[in-house]
Image 1 (cartoon, rainbow, N blue to C red):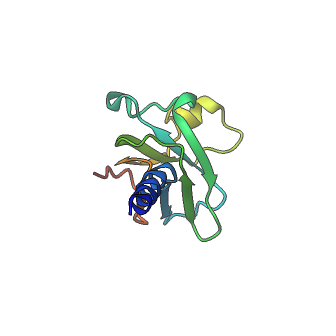
Image 2: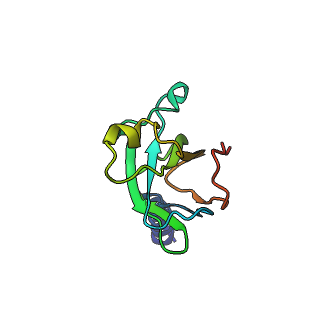
Image 3: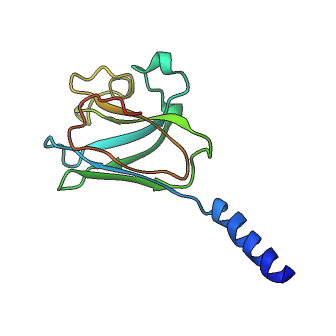
Length: 130
């Protein structure tokens, strides 16, 4: 009986170690092959500026307009994250991409942790999600 209890306890504890997030969505605009960034927001008062240190992952939008972020590199506590898309040309400087100075920058703010699965709406028009 004790062996079964220890086994069950180990399985439950190890499940926490295998936690993984999944954030996915679809872009309604024609944005095929554009880059989408997942960033952590350290200071909510500075939402308009994303520095290179804040970017956790980047991915490319597929031909159907879908993007997907998966992994287990987030903190287990709830934090503020942002998914950011801009229409800057690839020839633009990094400062234009990351400091929000592109004309058509779009982003979604959300609160999540390493265990969450979120599917975003197709509108993706500077919406703040709770």
